Amino acid sequence: MRWLLDQKVERFKRALMKMGWFTEKMMMRVIESMENRQSASAKQVVEDDDVLDAMEVELREEAAVVLGTHAPTGFNLRFLISSVEVANTLEKIGDRTRRIAQILLSFYREQSANVDPKIIRMAKNVAGLLKETLGVMADMRSEAAFEICTKDDEIDEFFQEVRLEFINLLNEKPEQLERALCLLEIARELEEIADLCTNVVEAVLYAILGENYKCFKDQMKPFKGREGVLFDDSD
Picture 1: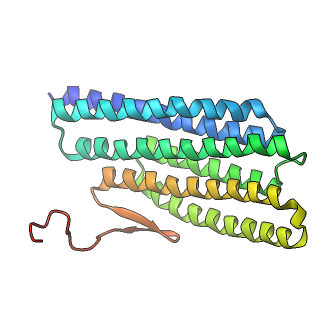
Picture 2: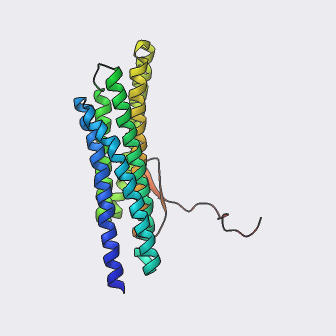
Picture 3: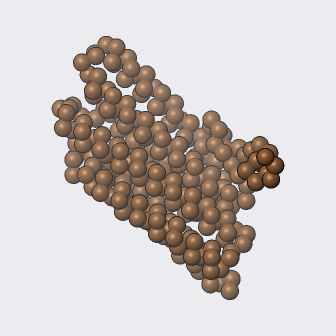
């Protein structure tokens, strides 16, 4: 029955959004830790990652049940397939966020200085991008999905500025090697989270439009790919 399938898909979407909001909360705790040198917030993020992992498994198992029981077609089929990919991507964002928290905990033990303001600014920009990504997912808005790609490119440029600044710092003050490397690693993880946000909206676009898109530089473009080889019967 179509109405029953629609109910299952809507319930699945609510669960996926719950996972997304939990991921965002992890990101906000990291920022709170950066701003206030709070070890407790960073430790909570490390613990939260196990919860996020469990959510991803639960969503994947539920998707298998719905697909096997109701044999959806059209949008519902695309949405469920895309949602499994989104859940996996959110789990990867959680892994990156946990890694940042672990670096922060090490940083607090070894360094007396605060986290550089530019790193905090970058973290807030990435958190904003994640929030917008979740909004695209919640509203299923294809127009807004294209904007995420442009904003990811802006974060890439900001990362390059931060990277160059810390490299120059190393040349001028080699005694700050450990501090600079920690902060560079955090910046790199943040840049990766921004990239993963584009993966989420790529999956959302597939669910909405039924076409594959890839974020290239600052534009979301249709992805045609090459002639298929995986299912070619020839050797």
